[in-house]
Image (cartoon, rainbow over all chains, first blue to last red; front, side, top):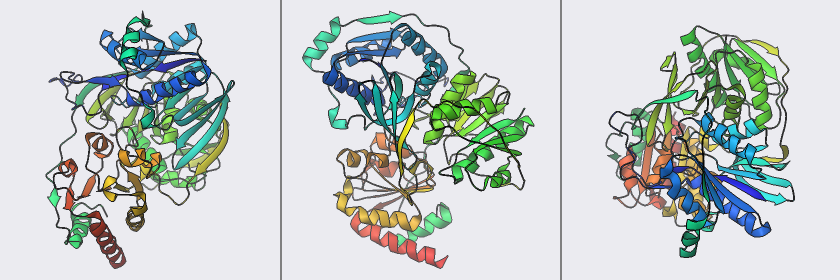
Length: 248
Length: 313
């Protein structure tokens, strides 16, 4: 079983987000970068599959050299090799085109992406990649079982769940549920040491069509000060919600 | 050419997100001086209502089972259009990128504004888990907009759409084995009101009052990450940065301290009410209204007060 896990390099979930003075990009000063949490569930699921039935796990990121520590961390957690496609990701289609290009040259049985990255929240690359490859795709995937060449998946849909079955290869957009929070692994010293000698290949990008472009970033408008209501004044809260906030 | 809109249905029923998508397409089409063509499943009922939201034409088709199949159909039916609108529901998020990949069109997801301008198309979208807003430009002859449900609103107009049926081919690469939808429950991402609770409730047996409050308000129930991690509530109720992101008109948080990751998933809510015993809980800084008090006393009183309010209306 050869598994490709696509990894985004994103600001830590606790990071305060600021933008450069001209609003053109994230101000990365003081920001800690991590493996995108959705991808971490996928990587852990890949480790479970490998431990159950063998195989190799390749982690891939489309990004500049600054993302290599994130790939090394994925190697320290247990991936076998890493690939960095040397391009600054500015557009989802271009990222998907580059991943597709890599997959076309390297056969994988299973491609695990996180449902979305917590920086751009696009939720675009996995479905685009699957469409380009004409591979089956399951979004918001919260369960995956492999039986030979057949994948049985469970996905969140609006108001419930759906179960699917299909032949490999396929692409999933995964999230918590693939594995649980407690299953996530912290790299140990042996993992960190061995990650140094695992292969991290750099591939040159293909030019994408890039139909979208960021014009600017801003922070959301701040909230006005909170109005406190005494716990014995519940009727007053109901009045405020009705008359002032028009929320009920 | 027209602005197309894919209208989702839920087991044949049209919902607010369906009408909101048509409203969006109408606003965009008016800016371009074009008409609106709605694409909707032939098993949906009451599709003539789409005319009231701005659809000039309503084309029904027999949808494929999987997202990819529907994406192929939508792509072929909207060929040559000036643009496409899809609401950002779970299913919409699955098909919009596939249509973009098939058509080569530029896509904005998580969109929270109608077009700021049309040449090139510019919209605002949520990024960095609601900690940022991005203005994005789409340089493409066939721009695709997937918007966050409840972020645009519905505009009713009087009008009648011309209904016709079309055939479109879509290939299903997946086999649907089973579908289970909780009936009678309001889906979280499109809920107008969300009642959410956290560890302050001390145990899963105490959720009765949360459900009661949700019931009075016609709200969806939700929970914080720790509560879903310890298994008090299902993952599908977890709102926050790595859970579901919501933007209801009213979000009531009970016994949730308001960690930055939780706020990322709820800060787009229009009105936030926080009930917490700890006056220093960070959530109060992000709230519109706050009550420092014991949930076990406050929530039943709130249920009573809201019942009285609803009865008086």
